[in-house]
Structure formats: structure tokens, C-alpha cells
Length: 146
Image (cartoon, rainbow, N blue to C red; front, side, top):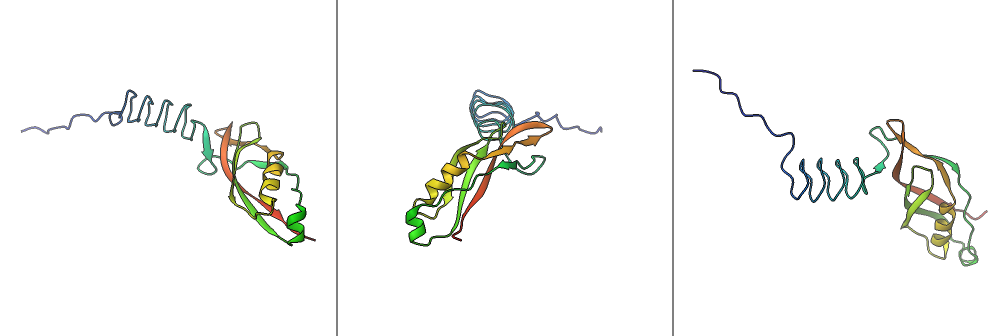
């Protein structure tokens, strides 16, 4: 009577497509799409599009370098509108904002002014393991009457 040893398990579950390692589609390494790694889409790594990360778990936060204030619209000034627009964006590995979307707007033309302003912002890019990476962040753009 000997000890029965279980057969070794595969390194990853079977792929749900032409890829390998548990991916869906042509991916390898558990990803979805044609990339490599746990990402979604082309590229490699664990982000969306292959290389877009979120801050935390070894991903540093990008640091603002130049953040010009937005202009007020006359419409908003007359209506005495104040508040904060919240924008979702990706800061690329060169420190430039891209794919900017309004998550919470104020109307009165201020959302467009916030977008216009944030397109001009510049950042020290985020890092992962010492390498510059793209990150998804949200930013607040404040509008105050003085």
C-alpha cells in the first residue's frame, strides 16, 4: 500500500480561444483579446489596452507639474455657478492627459472649459517597477467665484 500522489496540475486553466494560459481569444497568460498577460486588449501586463494601470499596488501616482486654471463662462458667471467638475482620464507615460471624460459636470459651459484646461495639464508620469506607465485617474476641476 503506497501513497498515491495526485497528477500535477497544469500551470493555468485551458484557454477559451486560440490563446493559452486561461485567456479568452488570442491572448496568452489569462488576458482577454490579443494581448499577453492579464490585460484586456492588445499589449502586455495587467491593464486595459494592455498597459493602462490604476494607482496603488506598486503603481505610483502621477504628480501634477503644470495645471492651468480653467476659464469661467459668462453664462456660469451670470448664474453664479460654482462647484467641481470631476473628470476621468488616462495620463500617459509621457505625462500627457488623454481619453478625458466628464464624470460629474456643472453645465453652463463649464464642463467644456474643464476639458479644455485639463488637456493642457502636464504630469510627472506614474511608475511601475521603475518604468513609466499609463494610469487611469480622476481629477477635480474647481470653479469658484471670488
